[in-house]
Image 1 (spheres, helix red, strand yellow):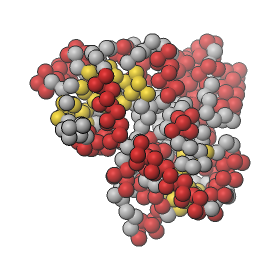
Image 2 (tube, rainbow, N blue to C red; image 1 turned 30 degrees about the vertical axis):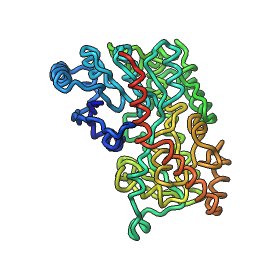
Image 3 (cartoon, rainbow, N blue to C red; image 1 turned 90 degrees about the vertical axis):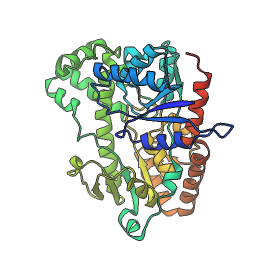
Image 4 (cartoon, helix red, strand yellow; image 1 turned 45 degrees about the horizontal axis):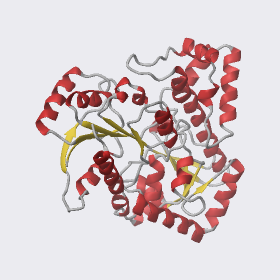
Length: 402
């Protein structure tokens, strides 16, 4: 089988996926014929790029792959593959992923693998049948090969660590629109935010945006869907404005709360260096391949606070923690509790008091903490590596008839 892999180096999972394609062998021991096709991703050119489309169409005719693969759905790739009658497999690992609402999603060439079970069901119910549910993965081969040195142990060891964005380094749409909102609309949105902050596992933001409230946001935000997309205004505002604001508040409040009781190391973008409440040591950014696995291996507790627009899915960061052999403490996520056993593979917190109580407990109960981390690592190694996922993708392609 011949696979054209779109090599997008800015996507974190690209390297591990490429290595898994290279390692694949079928039942007769035959490898894939792999074409590494370099692609420079930008949001604008991924929608429409006439020069690239012409070139890519010629390259498809030259290479004649059985299927094209990319991380995330790229409309421009789907458009060309559909013209040439070539299967296009995309595996979503970002959320929100606005390209899922592009008109090219309906192309019969597509096989779209969605890492969020809720989003997958929404598309299925909506009549998009070329979607499959496929959770993300980790490369235990790569992660296990990283052995902490004495210097690394000194630098990265911690009681509690959090690796992630505070989202204040990006465009803050909510803060921009608030001064322009009338008091009622502002109060309504604040009520949604405060209510959603009290609930894990169910996201009701989009459902709470009435036509009147949506119109008010539209008037002050000037944010509209692209002309080639069918996403609703409610989806845009819920995920790009409100859920992001909820995540900003939640992460800052939880990190501040924990820091008041226990020392915590925060690894985040440089633009967030001003955030250093009591007990929180802001370490700045960490390299995904060389440093992040060391943080996960050398922290007694690795905290996950999921971006609120990821409703059911297991974020890639969680797989990185578990695949590194780290102990995970997370908010509740439906898919995480489905694929892994709470209390055996990871621990989730139900509220702020529960979070502090469980931190207190697992910091002193080392044997239990280590056993949980080992259980999760074993499960990742057996069921959730990129090698496993490649086999599943090949099986899906073999079942598919264009």
